[in-house]
Image: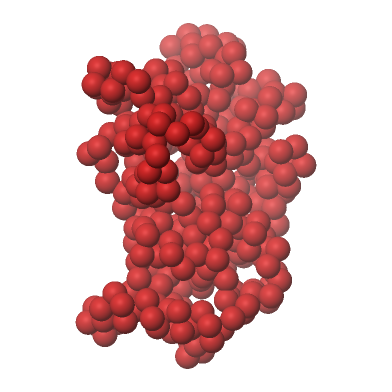
Length: 368
């Protein structure tokens, strides 16, 4: 079931009473419920969560990392995942049958993941097979739906993270002559380029127009990039970098590889969320940094490192809007529903989809 289909089948309207509670009242009630449920409750929080929710995290990290931590926590009956829909799906895929994964607000989707639905992907695959034959291996960023992970799994491919994308693309080229990279064209392009593949050997697949965007002989194509992107990271620009270079000449610029190719090439460093956090942590006191990633995380890094001068690469950026759907009222609502025995917003991936998605995840985990 797609995210949109799931959203249509659930009651995601927050009861009116939660709008009248103060922040202190909600925080105290959440603390009470966490104490009451003890080890039966586990709250993983993605790095991009707002602080009011992040303070209640039992674990913080990236999406796959949190799903893996959840799967190892056999004591928890309830995984209340503070992230977005595809992350909760991955947690459900990896956790046991007797564990329930809950997303506090079902509107917390991901625009990037939604840019590749299974119908578009299967249609594209059929056309690409006609054009190139059996020469393509599909790879998908973990920021994708369970259905896309399953598609990749049953077609011999694997998932990738922003940390291991280089390693997985190298592996893919030992399997087939070409790769189809879903759903983020920027991570795919930046990774392939970093491995020495020329931009002119990369094509873009437009799922809306059902069209391969490429000028030149098809046999030269090595990488087919799905035309998708992160709505947050795509808003960092070369002009942002130009401004920092002019007004803050001593600043190191570090960006996420979901940024477009020009931005990554102009930056001093690029890497995953984990990489960005670790680079700032080990940087010397007094160093200066402009960070190109989600604003909640940037602000948290600023707060954690008062000895360093840190700014957002784009000070006009907003936090990830869908990630910010998870707030105190929705977190409290989901927890009170657990206590009352009427769990809502349960994320459940069907067995066939889950088993095929696991194939894609396991191929990555064996090599990462």
